[in-house]
Length: 435
Image (tube, rainbow, N blue to C red; front, side, top):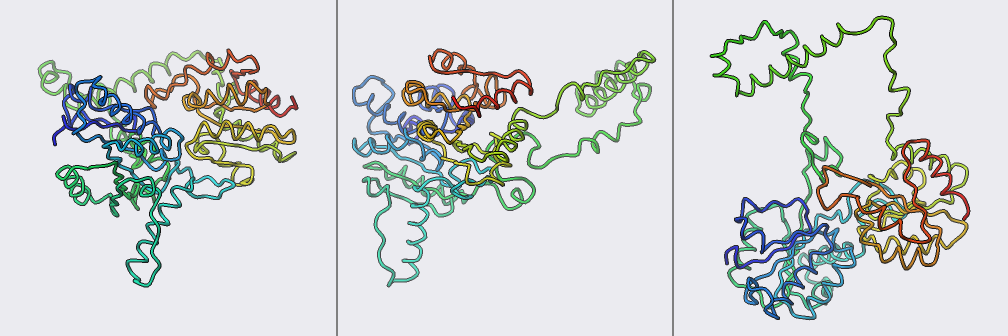
């Protein structure tokens, strides 16, 4: 079946299907969720709508595809929908990308050690390993079904998901023969490769920026123009028209102009005037750096502070803390709702100071828990909110622009937004007070 026979939802915010399908098909056949755990619910809703004939582009004879990663399967919505899709016997193909990392691999050590978070991942990898043992040894006792099979899903496994040809053959076979019940396509993949893992920490593969993996030496590249002056370059109008659009011309022009501006600034310096020492006025450390340093000081005096994070140890500044106080760190996986209730219950212990680290945009998922479990019962939980405000590189779904509005209306909440490192240190001291 062609593109018009597919409806796809994905938990990847950066997927670009424009090179595969025309825009008029993308708009109505592909829905991208803000994060992983909502993927199943979208497909469930599309099919339910189809049964009621509410949207004319959905046909129950077509194939519906949900794409989700192993990290997404730790979230509540995914598990709820997984249960309901099977119950409805919906004609859904769930492509489950399993790279064995589950959470963002920040290489942080928590109370559960340094391993993927979640018993479902453990169960599936144990299931696969024991299947291999059974194939190699006929006397090996038969293994029970995995969780998907027990939920009445057809289960198909691809051992090497990085093998494009193997993946294509399986998908083509499914396309040709169709599916008659909910089906899991379990694809085992490997993130990055040995070379990238050698030259760069594995967690950067979560969101790759230009030149982040294979860095280029820009000083070496631009060094060849160190002796270039404006007189060297021929500014004849005819030659400019010929070569002004070439990358080499543009590169030289940028360098020449920059060098000239620096030279002009040097000439215009006022004698006997001390330049402003900005490095002495402002710290170069980020709020995350300062938070880590301050909490290490608190822990040296009293190690009663517990840190909880839904799979964001690295971005929350908890890696240095985890190296020395691993039993004070809880990484609960990509499960924000659970993290809030879990932290709230722990904060009921007056002997402990609980710091729940969570990104602003992800905190929105747990708003119900914040209202009913934390605020209503006036529990002294410290929620350390990261990435508040505009976060340019992370896209529209990750902007932390709503937190002040939805937290400020809670009657028992105190919202502190430090404007500098001194305010931050005072706020952290307040968090350690009994209240």
